[in-house]
Image (cartoon, rainbow over all chains, first blue to last red; front, side, top):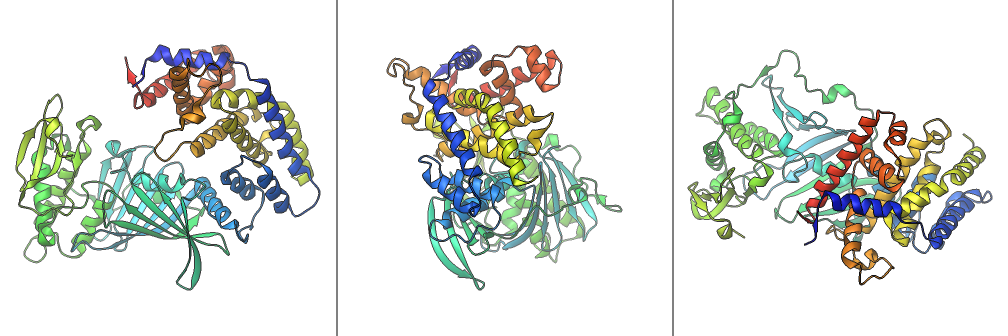
Amino acid sequence: MIKMNRENIEEILKEMGSEDVPADVHKIAEETSRDFSKTLMQTRQPRHYVLWEYIMKSKITKLAAAAAIITAVLIGIHQLAGNGAGVVFASVVEQLHNARTMTYSVVTHTPVEGMPTMRTEMAFKEPAYMRTTTADGFVTVMDWTQVRGISIWPTRKQFIGFEATNFRHDPEKDPFMVIENLKTLPYKADQMLGKKDVDGRVLQGFRVVEESVINTIWIDPKTGELVRVEMEFTNAPGMNKIMTDFQFNVELDDSLFSLTPPEGFTPLEVQADVSKVTEQDLIDYLRSWSSWTKDGMFPPTLVGAELPKIAAEMARQGKFGEGQTTEQQHDQDAITMYRGMMFVTQLPADSNWRYAGENVSYGDANTPIFWYRPKDSQTYRVIYGDLSVKDVAPENLPK
Amino acid sequence: MKYSERAEVFRQLRTRYCGFLTLVLWKLTGDRELFTEAMQYALLGMWQNVEKLNGRKAGAYIYRIALTANSKAWRNRIGRDGQISHSHAAIEEDPAARIGESELVVMVRRTIAQLPVKQSRAIVMRYLEQQDYKGISAELCCTEAGARSHVSKAIATLKRKLATLTEWV
């Protein structure tokens, strides 16, 4: 491991600044610049041929640059044959990178038996606003510029506001990461999948494998439209998201992303001071969840934008106090869930918390499902499948 | 703007800013292949934004274009695992003696490419262009104290990001 400090950085920066530009680099710059300009200035040939020729002649220009140039200068060049498939992919990526607004539908499937498959409408607007709407109208708005959000239950005329500080940039919790994942797809796919017929359209498939996400992107090669994105998660086998109905740069009114609750809505009363949530709140949450699901399974994930939607869907299916429970119990279940989530979201990054409860049933005393390091503690608290808790040395944590 | 007008404005811009782009992009990349790619992105960015580059704020746009081009080139270069191949990191002068240093320099360059534009701009002005704070404050339309603050924040961010790759003492 390299040792360095602030002075090192400044030294390195100063050294970088004091280096002269080698003569051959000036030459490369001139040639690159001249070639680019020459291509633009050439005669009235169809421009895409000119640019294509430039791209192909450039030894080191990658598909990325090719796509960028073509996308920038031409409109409707998606009908390229042969190598054009890669260009179509790259131009879709460019469209994603440059999207000011984006809407799409997403269907989330989890392997948990009894867990409903959910369809959600997503809307994104620069710089960092998101709105999700479930099929039954449950709305969550996230405003990352304020790091705050609001969830709204239209049918019950209730809402709940929340802080999202601990969600930010955490792939497991930050729903914005899905958007960022789309907006930072590389220009070149790892694999071309060939064509398949989807709903009467012949689509070209591409695969991009990120660290823990396998993206399969389906594009209509005739129109260049992004039709479908499938995401699979290597750390959550059996869970996937399928995104369709993409629209880019449509006008989305700011009011859609307002954190002000609709008039006449009342706040969902949650025990006021969530700063005092404890490990026991998480245990209560896990116990409650396992009592709601078939086979006593724990949730597939603990926090994130999916969970309010999952909760709403469960409520729709009567899993929040169906039948025998009262309205009061219904609210209590939601509060239990909220406090459990808050315990996790308030854990600092250096707590190194991990959740491994997916596909584990309540009662499994041998399987650790959650662990974290309390502040200033040398050991970790480990919660097992029977919801017992033990203090465990770091070296004995599950691998 | 007509195509011929765009082409003429682009030609003027290229003449005016080619030296600046060469200087900044070379110092930010330190690698010929990466530099060429960044240069192509920068030229493309200029062509795409030629209308915006015809006014008073041209300088600021050029910075943004250069830094975005640099980020794109690095993004294409860095593998999925976030690592860069050592063959790309090599620096030609006495490579054996400078291996540790070159690794650090590459990490710093790569991390600059991931900084927000405002912060990377502060780094570029202060260290790569070696401007004084008076010059930086004029470019950034802020006070000298503000310029110092931008640079300081950029260094702090750089340090924080590098901390994940290195051991700090």
